[in-house]
Image (cartoon, rainbow, N blue to C red; front, side, top):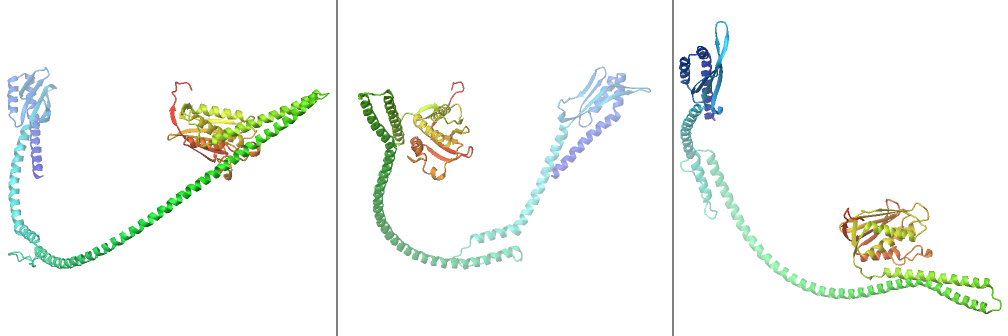
Length: 510
C-alpha cells in the first residue's frame, strides 16, 4: 500500500511537470511562434520547434497556419490514451489589433512516465522485500527461541503419553520463567493425573460390564427357550383357530344361501302378488264372457230376440275383451320390468353416441308417456360430447329415473321443472337429474332402490323402476345415489358411469 501511494505521488508529480511545461510554452513561446508565422520566417519557426522538442517528455509539435501550411516535428500518436495533448491558438498582436494566425498542437508521451514508474516500483519492491526478509527472519528467530520450541516440546510430550506407563511430569529444559508455558505444563500434568484416575475407573467398569454381559447372555438363552415354547403354543392355537374359521366359513355359506333363498322367495312372492291381480281380472272377465256368450246364443235362439238386447250383450262382451286386453298388457309390462331387475342380462357391445341428443330423446319419450303432465326440461350438457357405453343399459337407467320424477314429483300443474346436468369426471360421466317436487323422505329413500318397493301401489305403481335403474347402473360398473336438491328443492339423483369420451369436430354436423 505504501508503494502504491508513493508511485501515485510520483505519477502526479510527472503529470504536474508536463502541465508546467505546457504552461511555460504558453507563456514564453506562443507569441514568438505567432510572430514567426506572421512574418513567414520558417527558419526561425523551425528553430523554435527544435528547441521545444528537446523539453522533457515532449514528443510531438505541430504548427498549422490559417492558410493550411503545416510544420511538424516528432512522432505523432493517434491513440490519445498514452499521450497528453494540448492545443494552443496562435494570435499575432500588433499595436492596434490582434489576429489569429494559426494553432499549436503539443503531445507529451506518457510511456516514458510509465517506464520510470515501473522501474521505481521494481526498485521499491526489491528494497521492501529485502527489508521484509530481514525483519521476518529476526521475528522467526525470536518466536522460535521463545515460543515454537516450547510448543514443539509440549506436542512431543502429549504424543508420547501412555497411560499404561509410569507417570513422568513434563519439564522444560533450561527454562525457569513462571509464564504461560509453565501454566500450560502444570495443567497438562494435572490433566494427565486425572486421566490416569479415570482410566483406572474405566478398567474397573469394563470388568463389571463384561460380567453383566455374561449374565445377559444367560438371560437371553432363557428368553430364547421361552420364545420357542410360546411359538409352539401359538402354532397349536393358530391351527385350532383355523379349524374354527373353516367351520364359521361353512356356516356363513349356509346362512348366505338361506338369505338368497329368502330373498328369492320374497321376490317370487312380490312377482306373484303383482301379476295375480291382472290375471285374476282376466279370468273373471273371461268367465263373464262365457256367460254373456251363452246368454247371447240363448237370446238369438229365442222366438223374439230384440236388437237392443243383442247390442247390450255385445257391449258387455266388448267391455270384457277390453278389460282382458288391458290386464294382459299390464301383466306383460310387469314381466318385462321384472326381467330388467334380473342380475344377468345380455351384454351388448358398447356404442358411441351423442350424450345431449340421447338425453333429449329419452326425456321427450318419457314426457309423452306421462301425458297430460307437462314439465320444463332443461338439459345442461356440452353439445359436442360423445360417450361410449352400453346404449341399452344407459337408456334404462335414465328412462327410469326421469319416469320416477314424472310419476311421483310432478302434478298436472304447469310449474313442473326438471334439470339434467352432465359433465366429465376422471373417466366417468356424472349425470344429475333433479326436479322441483316435494323431495323424498329419508325413511322412503332408504328403501326406494329395492325391488317392488313403491308408495303408489294403489295407483298402478310396481316398485320396479328405480330398482331396474339401480341394477342397470351396477351392470355398467357405475353408481346411482340420491340427495335432496339444493337448486330446485326436490329430489336429486346422481348417476356416475365409467364411459369413453370423444369430442365431435365443430365442422361435423351434430
